[in-house]
Length: 159
Image (cartoon, rainbow, N blue to C red):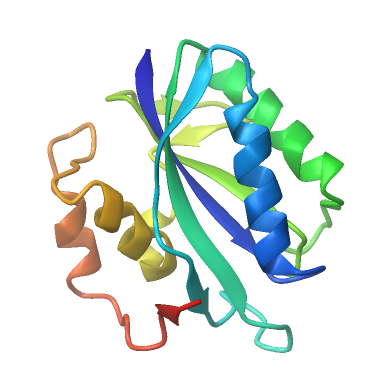
């Protein structure tokens, strides 16, 4: 079993229920179990500001699945909860599940980039990640806490 950290986000259709349903669905993925769940945070949208605030959290999983297989499951969960992928990024959504880190692996494919390609700019991902894994490092050894240090966290509030 390998450790994996996923970011969860929602700002449509009862975000609290969306994230709780996602956690239940993640726990039901074969060969996978939930290890830890961060607190839930209210954050302003990343990108266009003309949308509701987000509920953000991070979950740690332990999985025997390969990264692409886990991605298939997370995308299925998003679709089952009404996620519609649109051409423009950062719009409102019922559910967003992003693989932040997958064990100590570095991956770059058309489907998946790990560590998450932009997590170093997203305090709303790093705050909950560090809550449940305060000593976590990137595969290259960089402490994740050092990524958060220069970022503005003032608008991240408890849900």
